[in-house]
Image 1 (cartoon, rainbow, N blue to C red):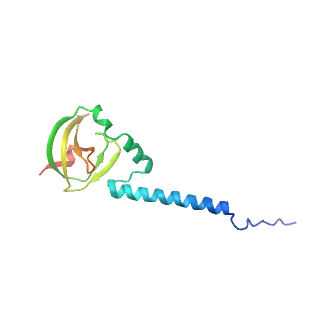
Image 2 (image 1 turned 180 degrees about the vertical axis):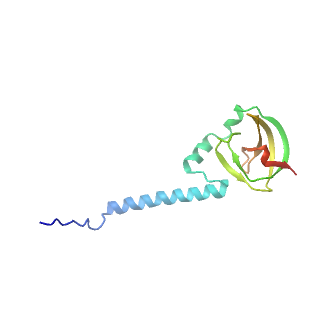
Length: 134
């Protein structure tokens, strides 16, 4: 005797509601990602943005920064990082010929980093090899 498969029938209203909620959540995440790329010139996920926002500018206390004030030009495209380290989270990008305000200099493990003022007024860090004087 052959078995027949049961067709599940039309979706219930609860199933439709669940799919609508999932669609709204996924659409909201896509909008957040697009906004972060436009506003922060980076691709931060929602969780990274919240983490970055909670920890902003706390890293200054951990580094011995030599204060300086200079206007410099980006000589090669580079990532702006939250901390002066290749492991520091990327919080933006600088492109060739962008101009930045440098507010400090840091030497860590024989690598020189500049502290810069980002577009939102917060500190960011780039390698010295990425910048040059005008």
